[in-house]
Image 1 (cartoon, rainbow, N blue to C red):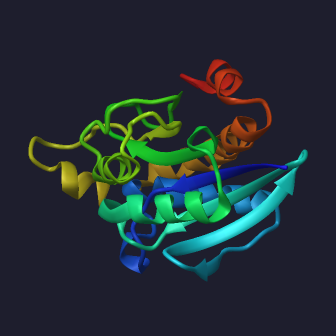
Image 2: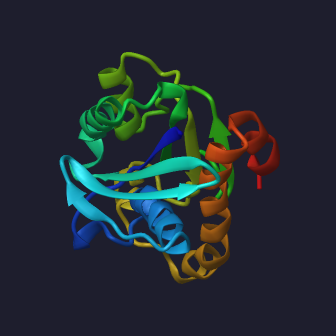
Image 3: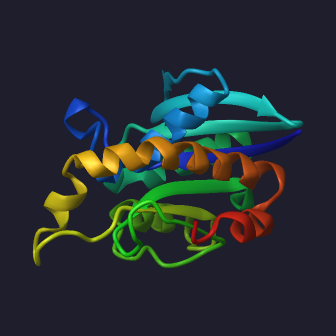
Length: 188
């Protein structure tokens, strides 16, 4: 049976729950809800598991805080013997318009500390990632405040329709593969 590790990046705690930086957690929550599974706190993160079309999906929300996400990713990859091609890291991206989806096979960390730590711990930037655009509607020097800020009312109303699409991206990655997922969802 093929295994997939889907890692949603975010920060733990109520303070960060509805922030833009936590979109990875939010997307994994949507996937878990759609597949009627719940997260259990395990080593280095909250984990939910489900099977779909002959595949096993491990949903991981690291509890190491964003900047140390690589430790949890590496641990769960090794524990479950999941190949690097079968991981998908779900994260926010300031350089993409709000709600836009971009799935890639590899890439730079783009200044994202969570991706930077994963790249460092895995020793490569060649792992699939799913970037969800959060836009760049902030004043110069206010980037941190923006990503750690809560969604505004307009964004919240748009997330209602964007989150189910994002959940489909995750399942598509595991069922029809990276290339087909990119062709179907990139730019949507």
